[in-house]
Length: 595
Ligand SMILES: Nc1ncnc2c1ncn2[C@@H]1O[C@H](COP(=O)(O)OP(=O)(O)OP(=O)(O)O)[C@@H](O)[C@H]1O
Ligand SMILES: [Mg+2]
Image 1 (cartoon, rainbow, N blue to C red):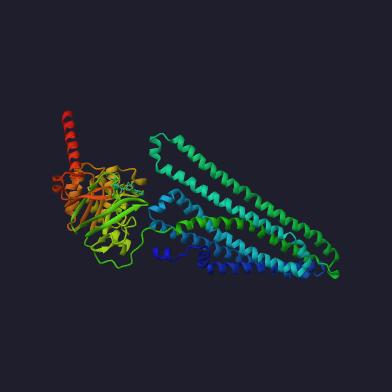
Image 2: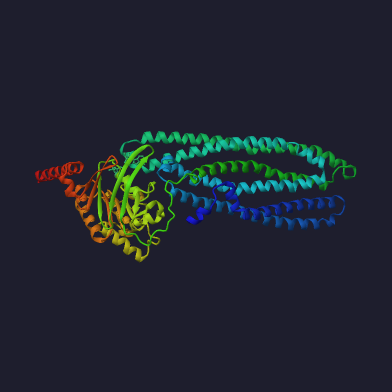
């Protein structure tokens, strides 16, 4: 998919060029259709004049020709729609692929700027508008041009003067549609923006439905939603008013042309062909041709609206297409396998102007374990994300087996480093699919073996066995149907699945009790010899199991050493350990008193 996405242009003209063939064939079909209609008009002159000139017995010939032409025109019309509408659908499909591809590589800076609700409205409503632009919009515009040419040819051949008279209102029509299309464009853009805000309100309400309920914020949220809804209604009505009046107004303007035709056309008909006038057949054919132009002219109004909406939609999509990804893929070839040694050298990182990590340096040999402890907000999660290249890691600061991670393809780094994030996220799918997320085919027996092994290692296997449908239990959106501790361990199993050479565990056990935590750490140590582990934790007991400990304070490493070394030294870690020791003692005391 990636290769496809990379080759898809993200400009309007580029998108059009990509489907030139379909549009061309569709155009040729439309042209053929309009030529056939032109011929039908000619046949009607022939048929009517034969009747009026006393040759009624010959009228079957043009009649038959009209029937054949009408059938042919019918097929051409269908074929033109087939080609152009299909191209519109293809454009929608391709742009959706690019959109998802972009959304996958864009970083936190982008998602801070654009909410999920807003992105969703771009991915649905705006994308649909673009499809209509390339389908209906293109079809109608091309049809208007050919219909105009085909009808004009008949009209001019019959009478140039009559043509000029009946088209006298054309400049009015042009000025009129141009003015309307401009205001339609701005109103459409406003409308799509308000829709984005509305879906944002809905999305955040749904995502935080429990919080909203528990704080009894429903009235407040209802009011916020009502405001967004009212703004959307107002913007939609503004468009509906304009669009609703567009058809009748264009209709009225073209009706004035009809009036002119009857006035001057009747004069020419009464004069007759012998005196510079026109025949009955010509009168009818002229009328028929001018009517044939009326509908495309009316449709022009809709097409302009569609094109304006499509353009507005495309511009909103371009904001996503053109957003710069923060994390750039490295180009060097990754080695066949990694050992798992991690080196961090003078790593500085800031969110905007806020420095979060300053001069962080440490080394972890393959197969060793390192605990990172520190107060909340000291930069531990940021460091973990930088290691896995989930944030823009600065060049020359993080090395995997001595290779700068920025020079390696992001995919290979993420495969080598298993990462369990602090707030475990589960997809609304089965337990098996959540654990086997990284597998191409998670439903095969081989995959099941891997999934079960990872579940054992993360000490969640027994819990899963107790679920109603074991590994096939659907966990609900964001995992609402499993407990916090189970969720964490399912997410941990996901990180363990492919036995990565390095594991970065960001406080993955905060929601499990100390005993389970010890069992998990024991399993991780036992299962994979030679795997390096970075464990971010708040528990001294967990940190003590690691070969080495670094203590982060406000983004700076303030202490480093083994558990015993750090305990022997007065400092953050020793204080931390003392606090936890007292807490545990207090708990034990309270427990005894209870007994
Ligand atoms: N996306 C972000 N944008 C701006 N600032 C951020 C962002 N993420 C974190 N920060 C800030 O960076 C600092 C470090 O955050 P980080 O999440 O790394 O801390 P932490 O040590 O993992 O804390 P905890 O123990 O609570 O998980 C905090 O002050 C936080 O407010
Ligand atoms: Mg954190």
